[in-house]
Image (cartoon, rainbow, N blue to C red; front, side, top):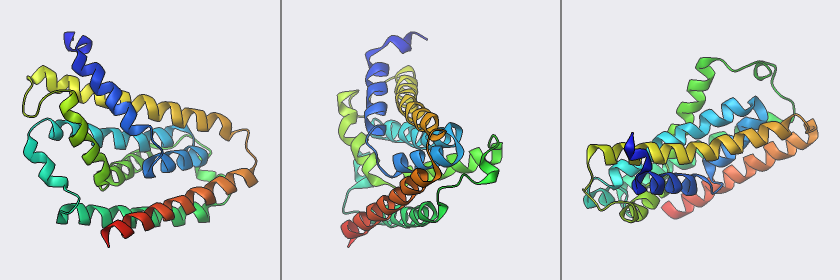
Length: 211
């Protein structure tokens, strides 16, 4: 486990944290689910995004040609943007309609199936957002040159990225869940509606870039 002390691991950890920290679609969804279902559902959403980040860092350091996959003007990027917009619209509408009351089914600990479904939605939303891939393609050379690195280096990249990202999601979902018990239904309703409007606005921005 000596690779845990390598600069590559620490750099990947910082990169994973920094990419996850800005509040984007997954962050808004994490906050919304932490309010509605507690820290576990918020964390599950974030870990889905963390898994996608691991995939991107491995792709980004595999070959310089990987940048061709997510060129802003490529058909793959356009399709990903449309998928992202569709998901954002659906989740935005659900957030607006959720109101301020905690659903009875979420007052108990979420089941494994609910957690897996939540995790999967985080994976899909993060994977359909080409911005994350572009960030990793751009930042990867600061960690290790394209196409280089041993098997241990790849493990360090994957583990560091996932851990750095997971730390952020754990902190975010945990803080939201703590304050959740102190919020009145009217406040939660405002947050839900605000999250929904913001998700719809993000969808509009994504569609505008495609057009």
